[in-house]
Length: 279
Image (cartoon, rainbow, N blue to C red; front, side, top):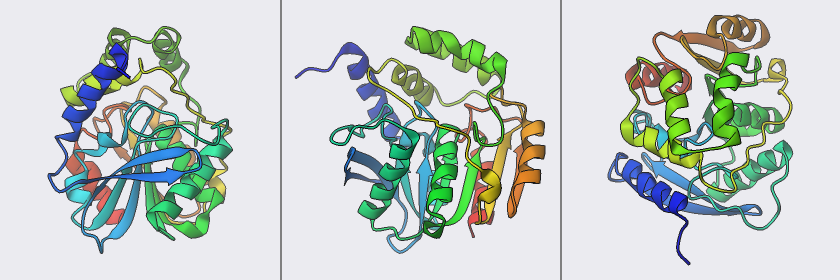
């Protein structure tokens, strides 16, 4: 069965971005009740586990600029999210809600053999990570949230207005225009931009943000890294709220970064802060 033009173009961009990962990166497909999940695995087999959840449309490959540094100390597991574009397959038990995403993560960690892990997410992936950490706190040693959306605050209205055309009538051109607006001045990798834009055109994508999690109940050490120029929300206001909310929180604003340019721009600054926290 041949791929549709949008899926075929996405597959090509996916393979091109995969080529930017370290040569020793392994590809794993983990069975869950909701379908097989694709994981990009890098780092020493005896390294402490670190699970990375990307933002919407980004795929697990978005961590290509972070994997070399993070994988020097950790066994990195970068996930293609269930319900989103990528090589994760949605089959079996229907995926209907945010609770299903939490159950999927339970099954994924079981399949990886991870009783406990460090957990890090960006954007929508950070929302999933926060919700999972509340659901299964004994399985999460440390939690890192990179410019999290809908955890401490909602989206800025201007951001939603700009994003609307890509949601109503998705196209590569509309997604590229939206990215250019949000990431102005940061110059994200061109291969990743192409993958992100094509991901928005893949049929059948569905994200499940669900209600805002009770971040004040997070019991584990938590790091929040916010993008100074994020257009998804106002970084300083979110930082102030995160500092008031988190019982064991560390909050840092990354200068010069935007929401969608993370985690791949200024990777040294992000990696160093993340590694310091995870240690």
